[in-house]
Length: 305
Ligand code: ACO
Image (cartoon, rainbow, N blue to C red):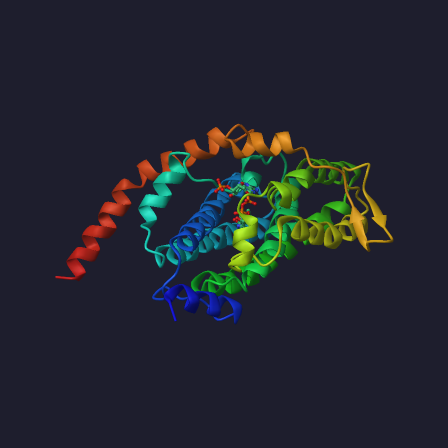
């Protein structure tokens, strides 16, 4: 049996591929790309929420938000470690992100303008992330699948705290209700874009599905998110900013309007509202953290003497 045949057999039998196993070079590259982008998303994703740490409306909300932002940092670190098991250096892929040569999720290029945005990010953005990541708990690469299990548990807490924060606003004053609706209006479509292009325009999907890196197509997961979430919007007494949205009795799903793919492509190409600001913040943090990295390395070297 050749190495390729052994690999194919493990994929067919749902036996995880582990770092020491032989794997096709393209499989390795695809995983480094996806896990790397995922890690960058977790790290860049701290910025829109970090923006509200000093302005949270109460000590309780501040403590919750601080814990959530720290969780995202932890997710990034697990994912960089998972990527490193594939033979890449974390500094290398991080530098590629800083240079704009590796992507991170489009969603984090939108600004957080009011407090309701923080609730809506927890509820919709982490909610969308969960739909995508629960599926990845069964991805074919062992270290990625195992990282996803813990990450999903934490994302689930994030999603619930976000919904609870939105529920408080929904039961508040007229001004608070308007603030919530405004946040839903701005984040609904970008949350749907998190699932990526339609399957017909997704260059990586077919091969990633065959390798069981992805377990479902982008459209199926997006539909699952819409079906889960529309009743939650209604429960809050809010509306979805999509006049074409309706329940389709025949398909048993909500039918929604076409996504603005021009906007999606612009954001992914680096021309979204906050792309420059996000990368500038990460570059500044990297430069200002030089002394911390040097001190940590010097300390580690001393311990090894
Ligand atoms: N934002 C930025 N780039 C995107 C997005 C998005 N929302 N959706 C797709 N893309 C990119 C892909 O990375 C790919 O780029 P590349 O080939 O130049 O590297 C290109 O657009 C084409 O898309 P697909 O062929 O569909 O790419 P892929 O098969 O990788 O599917 C998906 C995209 C669904 C995002 C997949 O990579 C995935 O499941 N990633 C893991 C989850 C993740 O990264 N989540 C991040 C947000 S959640 C959070 O951090 C809280």
